[in-house]
Length: 269
Image (cartoon, one colour):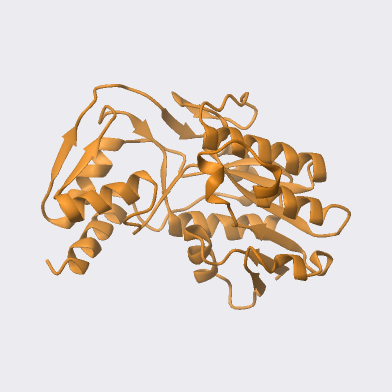
């Protein structure tokens, strides 16, 4: 197994990633403040999960771009850099599957900042890196600034999930455990270039919300807008080519039911 430097172990995805580490993995963990103390040339793979939350809503500032900083530190060294980017760099979904060669047309600050980070990484490393555009990652995450985070919080606190989009809009959701498993395959393969990472299929967002409610055992689905927007899936052909056939532990419905049940247990239901 390669020698791996993992930056920012407290992140949601990184916790799942470390939880699936192979027994023989040679892992060194650093936080967002201490990674500069390490000689990156001593590692085969450097994977960064550090992210400044201001990058979600404020204009791009180079000093806040951890991916850019780490990539530049890797330049000229024998390590392979893995960047965890976002499908938001593509821009709003049109219902078609995103492909890696699609033009980037980000429409929000977060997407623009991710696209800018990707460009900085490529300027530093060329194709000597893996840039992963990740779809909607979900898990047990009440309170996080994500669809699942908000849905779980309002289901627990208000007994409902509110959608501000048409419930029949299809989106690509991947469980954090499945995302972590794919990340380990990327670390092992060290592919060069840009790759989509998701489930490769789209599900109606209203159906996903109802599965959470079903698992929780009670609650209402409230739709406050009929607008159809940002429907997407991820084309995983490139990832499959370099990592081999993809497999999932279980279906999204079962994963959502389990998350809903866990929420009910924590509520004492």
